[in-house]
Each structure stands twice: as C-alpha cells, then as structure tokens.
Length: 102
Length: 306
Image 1 (cartoon, rainbow over the protein chains, first blue to last red):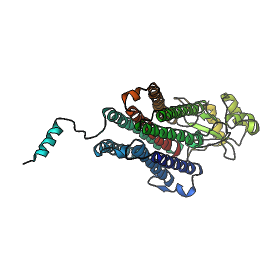
Image 2: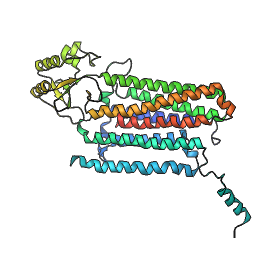
Image 3: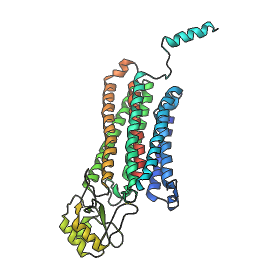
Image 4: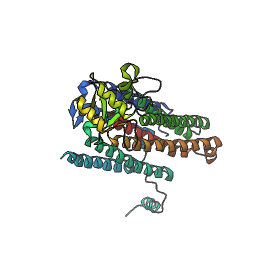
C-alpha cells in the first residue's frame, strides 16, 4: 500500500459507509410519502436503498479489500464472473418469477 | 526479426517467473473462495426475493417484526440492526488498520487493532444471538388458521394487540407477551367477548376478517407464539426459514471469522509473523473479514430495509 500515506483514507471510507448507513436508516424509519411512488416495479425508496447498498459494496471491495490497487488481470478475474453471473441470476429470477401469478 | 532483448523477455515468460496477477498464492486462493461464497449468498438472497415476490401482499414487514432495542420499551424499528451494522463496519475498519500497521511492521499497532477486530466480531455475534432469541420467543402471538395462514389480532383503532393485551385488557397487558404462553381457549373466549376485535393478515395488503369470521377462524385454528422452522407468528413460514438460514449462515461466517481472527491475534502475540518477516497472513484474513461485512451490507438492505 505504498500509494497511501497514513490512515486518513481508511477513516474517509469509514465516514462514507457510516453516513450512507445513517441515511438508509433515517429513510427506512420515516419512509417519506413522496418516495413511495412506484417505479421499475418497486418504490423509488427501494431503488434508492439498492443504489446506496451498491455504493457501499463498491467502497468495501475497492478500498477495504484493496481491489482498486490490484493488477488489471486480477480485477477482471474477480469482477467479470460476478458482474456476469449475478445479473444473469436476477434476470432469470425476475422473468421466470413473473409467471408465478399466471 | 526480433531483437535480442525481445527474445530474452519471451524466454523469461515461458520459463516461468512472470506474474500476470501479481498476487501471492494464499491471497489468490482466498479470493477464489470468496468469489464462490459470494455466489452462494447471492443464490440465497435471490431465492428469498422470489419467495417474497410470490407472497408479496402477505409477506411480514420487517419493521413490524424486528422492533426491540435493549433497554428501550416499545417499537424501535431498524435501530438495533443499524447498531449491528455499525459494529461490523467498525470492525472492518479496525481490520484495515491492522493490515496497514502490519505492512509497516508495527507490532504493537497490529496487536491493538487486531484485538479490537476480534472484540467487534464477538459483539456482533452476541447481538445476533440476542436478535434470534427475541425472534424465536416471539412478540404478540398470532392465530394460525386451519389453512396454515397466519393472522394477527387488531382492535377498532387498528392497533395490533398482543395476546397479553387481548386477555388482560389494554391497561394490564403488555404490548409484548414477555414469554408468557396463552392457551387457545383463553384467547378464543376473550376474542368472543370483545366485539371490536378482529383478525387481519400481515403484510401491506393483508386480508381483513370480520369479528364473526375471526371467531370462527380461531375456533378451527390454533394460537402460535414465537418462531421455529415449522410455524412462526410473524407470517409465512418461509419468512422465518429464510431468516434463520440467511442470517444463520452469515452468523456462522462471522463466528468462523472471529475464531480465525483470534488465532491470528494469538500468533501476533507469539511473534510468529515477526519471525516470518511479514504480516501477509493478516491481509488474507482481512479479505475474509471484509467479505463478511460486505454480505451483511446486502442482508441489511434486503432483509430489513426493502
């Protein structure tokens, strides 16, 4: 980790994760009426939760698990299987799942 | 054709010594394990999503299920699980700090940060045990109809009542049953007496039964208190099954993580890595520990928030 001086970059990620979690919890408790509008088959609020979760996940993987500073080949070896298989799994589930009611 | 410099480079490439991924064996293997584990957890969470989608209208709303906070009375949705999330994130941070100190060969700092990581993980496992205890022992109690559907007791103001409140009255009863168990006959008699009480399915569009229908439902059905793999008072049986399975599997990961972290901590105390000349072991264990945190981020969203 020669790219880094000191530990400020760790605490920076800590605060980002903490603030995002805080925003999620506050939104989850008050559930603002305006965010309950339906979009993409769910509410805007749920879309916000999922996006915030992905942001948190990205920070943990990129910085804490150090993937950002790995060789390009290793980055691809880790990201490609996940980014191909998971959307595929979700796609199958959402498509086939919609037949449950027909 | 090729210059001498190129030939030597090619020879070098084929005779080994080239490191395309530039990662050591142990770290690479840890990554491959984590990748497969990530797919396993994704399988669980998507299966959970499918069941939830299937029973969309009567699926229990998490904030009505996980409402306890130690030392506080009444409904505290999300607070406890937010605290658990904070503990795990904090534990992840101390782990990065330990790895960072290890690279600088600062034995004292590694020892301290690693100890804090072990403690954080331990607190998290304890918190999960507390949550499981409350989930299993139950809260308000429910009626199971003879078609295996779960319905809850409500009063005319639309408040959900516990069996304790149904039988002992609103003043004397507790909002939570506090481990007291109630017989079907007592609940049935209390339900018959009070015309204002009725039964309703959980979820965002649960069916509402009239007072007469409610009495008939309980007469043919039974009372349920708490949760197990066969039935639970919160709603669909799949809800408790997925809760036990996903948080249990994650909790098992945390528990293994705490054990491994402790072994590493003990080795730091013994000076094993000092003798070895590097603290790379902490980096590998750190990857696992961050992964546990990563999974929790998703469990938190899909089990408690969405």
